[in-house]
Length: 338
Image (cartoon, rainbow, N blue to C red; front, side, top):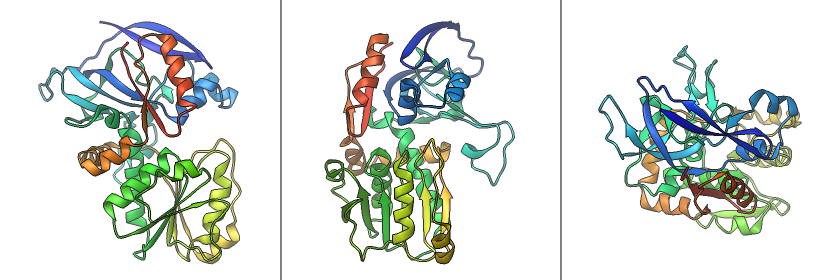
């Protein structure tokens, strides 16, 4: 079977590769809807270290996608059933105490190996989660929801029980999704969002408080915090968190930055804070994310931040959606028609 793979060969340049698809025991999935992540944009725009770009490219982008089964020889799935695809490829050595997304030897689609910008995806059965009766646009961002689920799950296991005030630094898609998860799971928690864009903050209508980062009240405090800013904002967010968090609080770090960030170790030590790095997700997180999307209120909140661009039918359309995404405040999704 000849398969079409749409690879980024250098920043802003795509090439179509025709490959012989030998699927073996894998299932075949046709992508239907995809979503663009900041990581995809960094490759597309060339905003990675030149050595990293050379080691990663050429590569098909996109790790957030849903699709439909077109072949399953095992008979577990029926043709046409809708699924979300898990981009994490665990290492061959399984370790009981290490999550699959942190195991040595694990790989990640659209970060060193081809992502979902392909005509057909050959994928193992354990990298799929059934996602029937869910809006396609919401299912397309399930990967990012699973990242939030993973972070909140680690927070539950590691933080102390005084959780009356939770702060989220970051008013983008990740901060919004983490806030949705926390409010769904722990409706009694007092949830405060710290951001720098008043228009984005206005979307957090379910939060108990919102504050601009340059206008935080002097008496403000939180029990625990999530850092969801990333980029150049990570330093300022972490510095604020260390200042406003109560002793022995847990700080979950989710924001990705290309540069090293200095931190106030003196106050971290004096307060006895716990910092938790949280990245990507595994199958159990995807299952929980799909279950959350089956809750109408939660799904509706997610749909509020999704912008659907026109469908993609050629490489010119791929360029268009990446450019569109630069001007949308949250998530950009599109129908994959290639």
